[in-house]
Image (cartoon, rainbow, N blue to C red; front, side, top):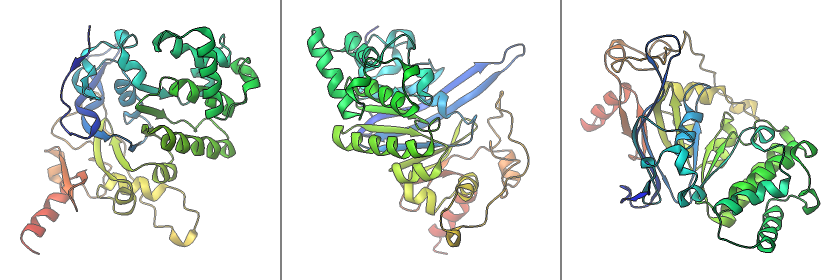
Length: 341
């Protein structure tokens, strides 16, 4: 099936996701688990877009939908002017668009074929999706990519189990950038690595972004890394977007109670800069057939009130209009501003 060309709504958007929804059937029972529910956002070319939230909020499912490793139930994914959601995930791997969206996985050991040497791992996308170059040109390109990612050439003949965690991740990164993608999805790229190695890999990713002009979709539990790395941040909770905006505003002027709780739990080096931690009470609501009329955060939210139980809040603009949060409390603030109070 060919990839149909459309005009992406935001003129400068590299990626535009609209009303994306993914439901998984619950085995042995009726109903569906809503992993991603009516999610919309855009990524501008050259931007690093951070994605944060608790485990189980839908981050990994969302990035796999965008990378076209999973099919979605509803919505639209427009990438680089093409509606890539019209192509089933099983067929997408054979389309030219596959090379323009690549992914670096969380665990480098699990994401590398144990039967492939580092050389073959990096060369594989070039052989499958690259131009019909000969062996010599592919070998030259693999060596260039190894140099670019700081992987010594003498390690190219080794298998994954013969490499350290940091070296394995360098192989994964070299493989991901082999086809010069426009969007690189980073799914917890350093969480499986030692702390000292994490800093080196993050520095490498920052250098590659500047040098190659790629956009990043950066998924992480480490809020301090996201704050340092991302230009824009999206916060998810139980499959929904609860807040999004410029990184400094998300961390310094959080508007949603859930985001404030996340930020308050992040480690701070300077004890004097630490703010009181906001501890959430209660249990998360079930993601199985959730009510469309109840705020997903209701029951844990310290600011929840009756309306939250009967009406789902929608994303509202705050401040300069670029910062959005889904909370009924913001409606009162907008009303007061409009009345000049």
